[in-house]
Length: 238
Image (cartoon, rainbow, N blue to C red; front, side, top):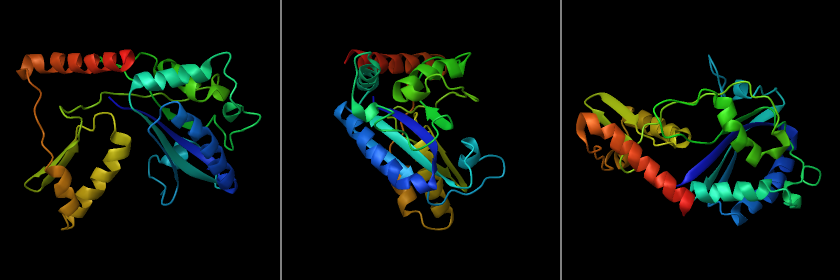
């Protein structure tokens, strides 16, 4: 089961090339340690929201740009092994040395996503739950304060693909299986296209098979949880 670490960062616009150079240096190390793909997305059309938005989420100033990044791993075991290696006391790679490869942004204003829990209730202290994962990736800010921590239930489908479709004039999209930060934007765009009369791309995802979980009303949830735990254990044991 693949694993994704995601980040939203405010970077001084004047430091764009410094950020690119820093990312190229650090990202190469993540790939060496097993990451399958790394995306660093510099803002292009980030609008101000009415209630909240990317800029307010990281308290971006007018001279800063938003970067949305994520690291994809083949499984959590590979990811945890890489983080443990980077956090080892004898680890001395100049690519992670803040003196030789300083971060060209304020790491204390960061949205960090990572960690999972296979139960019906979220952790009582989400910030404390996330902090060890954050410290593994950004040891320079291991002791930084966490202003907000949030989590929630994740809708998971049998094949881990989103369930997208329509019933008459009602369009729907759910079951993003932990990849919603990336796929919901695409789903919203495709639904908007379909509502405007161009459904070609929407139909591609809408035609993906969607199978119900077995077990009926009483056993569906326990069986789904057991299945998730089984694959989480495989990730950890290899």
